[in-house]
Length: 631
Image 1 (spheres, rainbow, N blue to C red):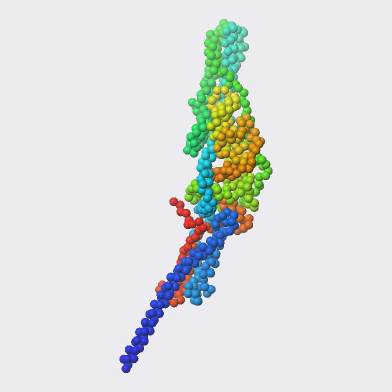
Image 2: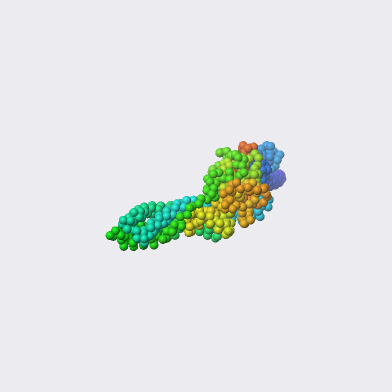
């Protein structure tokens, strides 16, 4: 009997063990499924939390500038934790009715990219996104195509304008050349007087002593004058030479940036100047020859033994004959009176005085708004800017975005920190007046260059300028000087026309980028009155109005620097309503690690430990895609 009872008990124990095993398998399966579901749900929770945080984009930034950014960098982690709280059971993830309960343990930011990071890369992407939505690609390409021509014009204008700085030195040297010529002509006349006296038989010791004395006194003066003039010419040549060495390097650098025709013109103007500095240059050679001849003739006359038995000696006769013939090169026809150019003097006065008074109808209407000295992005942001090269299309998009979202002269926006915002993108200075002045200077440089390039194609206007240059030089037959003055005159004429052009632009009119004869307004005689010229401009819409020229100037600038200036304007404007807004806190991308914890309900899985399960999930989100990597 005892054996039977043991047998029955073992069956019960067996079934108990089987049931325990089955329950263990079921509980383990349930807990494994729950663990997998929790892993998925926590991953979803992290991604959803990140998206929810980014859904809180800064609305004023979108409404005014069409840019998506979350504006509270320091509040990113608290916002993510607050969003995750809605996924947690009220019991903070402890045992309760929710089978999928978990709690947030920690949110760790692994990467955070703001608008100013990586050289403003995401700001640039935001601008590109906005411009793509407005189909600006074709217009951007058109502007970029013209910007190369404008850059060439500005280069030529700057180079030709710099030549006028040397005109005073060259003119001073020519004054000394003229003094040598004049002294030679006077000495020639003295020799001719002696020759005439010899022919008349009046050059005797008694009758001609006074005449010879005057001639010898003039010879002594000629020695002094020749030495002084030639020394001044050499000093001027050395002064000019040191400057031209820098010009030569500058000219070489610009060879690849301008057209062949423009380079040849710049090189020609440079060669005109080197005639005064090279030892074998025509003007240096002429001065050396004049010096040698004058010193020889003056020396012969000063040291001659004049009389023999009361009459003119053979030595005096030979000296007079030789000197009179040699000095015929000093014809005196170069002794013209130099005229003064009203145009050149007026252009110099324009450049010395305020530019705005030249191009605006009423300078008093210029805005006096000014950025706070504390305004702007931190210096460390700019120092660490860097960033990949900006493509041509991206540069065009930056230009069009700036022109479309910011105010400018004539179309100012209300309640902005600066009235002339596009001008600030160009100038980067603190006040409206400073930026408008700098923009006007750039416009004058561009229009001067474009006008000069046109004048090079107009043979009639070139001939007119050369005729005036000869009169202004006052020394006939001096090719280098006349050519130099001609170039300076053409530059001044182009500048005067540019003054008229820019005045038209500021009055709302249009000026074609490339002019033809029918577009030219000022005569050479009337160019000095450009500042008071009645333009008759009317407001017009078109690509070559003031806004169009601003776009061209922006195309010539640094797109990343312009992006930073845009961000500075945006920050200054939005801080008028929200003092806590800073562009360096505007987030466009985040990579975060989310750590969660949950308690086992059905069974402790192996390696889960006494503290339950821990999940670590990584999620990334960005308004404008993943971060760009430099190639």
